[in-house]
Length: 226
Image (cartoon, rainbow, N blue to C red; front, side, top):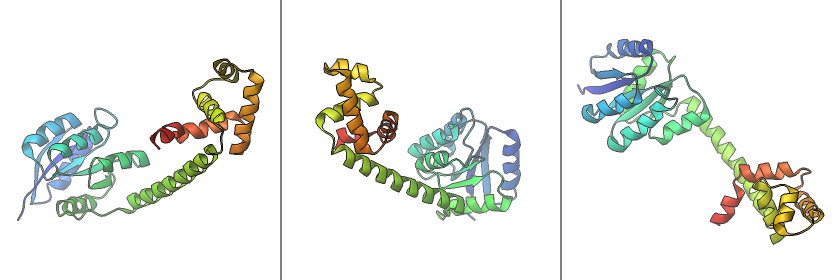
């Protein structure tokens, strides 16, 4: 019978004890140790070379587990990391998966679910769980909407004159009408007319709506890269 070498990383002693009790029911599980920080987990993992690590996210820092997972995967690419956490925030989920973790299990999972997650990870058969699938679908929808907004904004920008584009850029840099007029050595009324023209092309009524859109889409960085 193959022995599965494991580590536990969680800053709460009660959680570590619960996991130890669960893992000790399996004859083929070898628990090398349990740790309360990401840093100590990384240090021990380098010499122990575990097959599986059950990793909490929030330990000595809010994202200590994610940071530890990234370091471990750089030096021990064969080690499988399962995140056990209370977090369900989309950004945290994707940050965790970007480090190369193989599974994401909520701490309230049953002992059977935790054991199954470990065995699946060990055999390279970790599932895409419903909670993750839902988040992935939501992210794909968000990306698609963001791409549509970006293309619409770029299409509108293509209709701006060089002068209007420069004024829009200055607005996004938090300059007001008077400051822009001074920079361009023109009357403030001229700038107001040009801003009104920009607003009409974007189909909005207020300058802050255009500025918000430009900043959210990071438009001028996109233009620079084209």
